[in-house]
Structures are given as C-alpha cells and as structure tokens.
Length: 338
Ligand SMILES: Cc1cc2nc3c(=O)[nH]c(=O)nc-3n(C[C@H](O)[C@H](O)[C@H](O)COP(=O)(O)OP(=O)(O)OC[C@H]3O[C@@H](n4cnc5c(N)ncnc54)[C@H](O)[C@@H]3O)c2cc1C
Ligand code: SF4
Image (cartoon, rainbow, N blue to C red; front, side):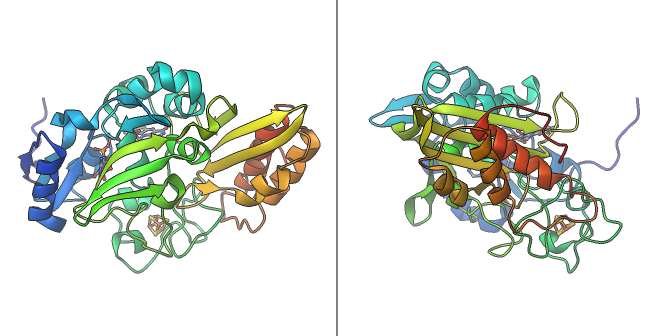
C-alpha cells in the first residue's frame, strides 16, 4: 500500500457538547477556527490542503442542535440534523414535502446519512478552479479563471455575476426559501434570525462567502412556519448524471391553487447564481392567473430576464425557463430543448 507522506496539516480538534461552549471556542479562536458539521465539504478542503485552519470545532456532540421538532407555528430543524433524518421525518414528509424532495436529491445516501441540513445550506462553491486551489477572486486573488473564453464554465452562473461566476450548489436551499423558512444564528452579539433568502449572499456583498455567517457565528436552527404547509409542491433537479451529482439547476415551488387559479406562490431556483434566487417577479405575475401551461410559459420568460450566459452555459437559460414553466403549468415536454 502506498504511504502518503504529505499528511494533512495538523489542527486541534475541539468537541464541545453545548452551543454555549461551541460559541466560547469560536470566539476564543476567531478566524483560526473552522466549524465542522458532517465534514463532507470541510474534509475536501482540509485533505486538499487548501484551507488550513488551526482549530476544528466539531459540532457533532451537541445534542441540542439535532432533530426535527413541532413548534407553535410549524417546525424547527436543528442545524446538525442529517439530510437523511430530514427526508424521513414524518412532519417534514406530511406538511413540508418540498424540503424532503430537495434533500433526498442531494448527493448519495451515504452522504445524506452524514451530511447535515446546516452544512448543506452553508457549503461552499464547487467551481473547479476554486476547489483546486487556484488563486482566483473568490480565493482573494485577482482573476476569474472560469470567466475566460476557454474557461470551464458549463456549471456556472447566468445571473447576478460580479467578477466571480460560481453558483450555490445546495439542493435544500431553494426548497427552504420556497417554504419561507427562517434561519436562526448565534452570533457574538446574540441570536439573529433571518429569512432563508437573506442567509445567502452574492459576490457583490462578499466574494469569499456564499452566506452571511462571520467567524464566531453558528447556524443553530431552521424554522419553517406553517404558511405553506400542505401547498402544492414542485421540486425538480437537473444534473449530468442521475446518481449523486450536484445540480446544474434546480427549482422549488409552493403554490396554493383554487378552482384552477393560483392564489399565491413562492418559487426559488439554484445553480444559476452565487445565491439561490427567489423569483419574486414570477410570484407576483402568476397570482390570480390559471395554473396552466400559458401562465407557465409567461413565468418562464420572466424568470430568465437579464440572464447572461458564459461561453459554455447558454443551455441554462432555456433550462431555467422550462423548469419554472413546469413548476407552474405541469410537465408537458422535455425541458432542455429551447
Ligand atoms: C461527492 C459529493 C456530492 C454532493 N452532492 C450534492 C448534491 O447533489 N446536492 C447538494 O445539495 N449537496 C451535495 N453535496 C454537498 C453535501 O450535501 C454537503 O457537503 C453537505 O451537506 C455538507 O454538510 P456537512 O454536514 O458535511 O457540512 P460540513 O462539510 O462540515 O460543513 C460545510 C460548511 O458549512 C459550515 N457549517 C456547517 N454547519 C454549520 C453550522 N451549524 N454553523 C456554522 N457553520 C456551519 C462549515 O464550516 C463548512 O464551511 C455533495 C457533497 C459531496 C462530497
Ligand atoms: S467562478 Fe469564482 S470561484 Fe470560480 S474561478 Fe471564477 S472567481 Fe474563482
């Protein structure tokens, strides 16, 4: 057997058993600390020797961060709940099936057994150059290797790019936005609660992160209110291979329809920008319209307004248009043909 001589850089492993202890450790070590949940994204970085934290704060021993609970209005999901538990939870399945659908399409069963919902929404970009340690904008360098005439950018952004054209790769994030979830964080200043869509940020705000967490912050809970419980849900993910693979694009929607008319709808897509996008203009435009192919067609066109393709990802524009159309008007035809 080969002997690996270039060992992973050493770090101190700290294993708190309460949120309060985790916070103390994070404050003590500041930017030297790395929060670890299931480790699936974290260990890629560490084993590739690209991120080199001095201290790893492992959340796996904190019981208060685990599990799905009924709340006064809806449910609460601890950030350390595995994707498998989320998918199999009866409350999630019965009332918020959209999240179960999205989470079940993430990665593989083994990864979902270990990967957590908090890690899934906080995971980093999957751009090949960045993950390989190239010194691009997102890695505090001065160039984007993907946004060049010959760059590998098939998977990259068509909307809201700003120097970096990487996309957010989460399958659970758009479902949580469509369900109007709230993300609860513990920060050094106290508890902070934000709408799911505001947890995610684009490069125009901070090019080095996909989310609002700062060193010292912890995502503790995801709250899903009952507002969209039992709605008509639609989740679709398109990926290169129908086994574990990141989304090229996904769509998640919740819709209340009465006598064929859309009363209200929330819809989000991911894989098109550095943050999952809530399509507010679509939600407004379809209210009061029939839930049919014509409304879907109109919504699809609206959704892709302003999209700018890179050299190799123009296919994402008709793909996004058609996924939005199908979310509203039902499945009628293959999606990726324009
Ligand atoms: C081969 C492979 C295929 C995959 N395919 C998909 C896919 O198709 N769809 C998809 O959605 N995902 C996919 N993933 C991503 C996978 O689901 C995530 O890596 C996983 O969900 C991350 O969760 P984790 O618990 O392992 O987090 P970790 O890897 O431990 O953490 C991820 C990041 O989040 C931070 N973090 C985690 N939890 C917290 C918290 N509570 N507070 C503050 N910061 C936190 C960590 O510091 C780290 O930066 C894939 C991953 C792999 C390795
Ligand atoms: S897309 Fe973003 S992450 Fe990828 S090379 Fe360009 S700047 Fe880096």
